Length: 412
Image (cartoon, rainbow, N blue to C red; front, side):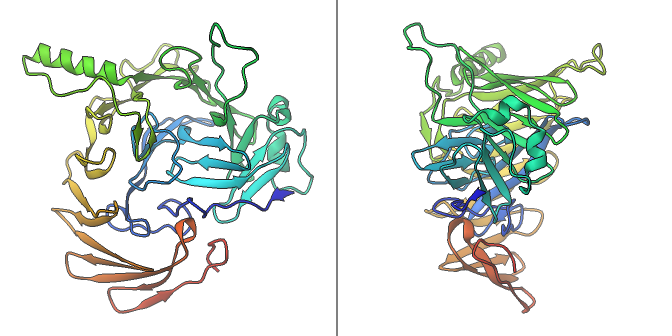
């Protein structure tokens, strides 16, 4: 039996461009939230069973219960940033789209299901699920130790899998720490298991300055990837050394970052590169350069992305006042797309020098989108937060589309 207490849309779960009912406009903006979004950009995707795929999603939307800033900086998330907060009577799943998804407390072996998001959250502690359960067969693909552990949680969005394993990072205890140490009040992604029992494992540091951070991944094909992390102090020192070697004045690059942003707590640790360090199929033919590299602003924001050939493929610019709020982005060789925001952090203009630009006007239950050819669309909405849906759309040609949704936001 599943818990009936999944509250994806309330109080702070939000509709987004990559979930049911999400709407995008232009390059792209989610007008329901007034958020600049990038639904997904893939930096690494090698073929094979249960491969390690490194992709980035961005949203300027700020949830009221954010997870800590991840290794791609404020506003950005990647699949490994999934995190589960354990509170007295509530479980909050922070996904890689910037949403906070609420579940009621689960007992061992119990599951919660979101109809609007088609997502299950299951707590371990039983060898088998009920035979009639849609996840019964997928559950048996898990190693017995995972199924029987009441301290682990598992999530999936399909009876075909895979499972996302939510556990904790093993760490080296302090010298004066009372053992055994209690488990932390959160769970992080430790791996994936598909329906054939193949695994992908995230290796997290047990001690040191990167304790708890992912520094390695082993995928279903047995390949090993090394994730190179840096601290803000290390990036500042590198910037100073580059300035000295280039004979230029060092830029203002602080050694520390503020511990909190509008996108959550920030430890300043960032991903700088990903290397393929082992491939069982080609053990003697490993690449001599990283598969991807990232460059950072002095404020810890993702500035540039370089591919495996060292070519810059993406660049991003952020608001001077609001850290992590994207105001421009560009693909190499293409025009720069710029954005303007209102005082509430909603996108009001999207400026494209080589194509259509858009303006956004927000009223209660009504959003007006006008392009640079003076064509206008009006979105009429109902619901709040994650259950906000477009119930009527007035198109630029004068036609009207109306939609009806059930109580959990599904199209009827």
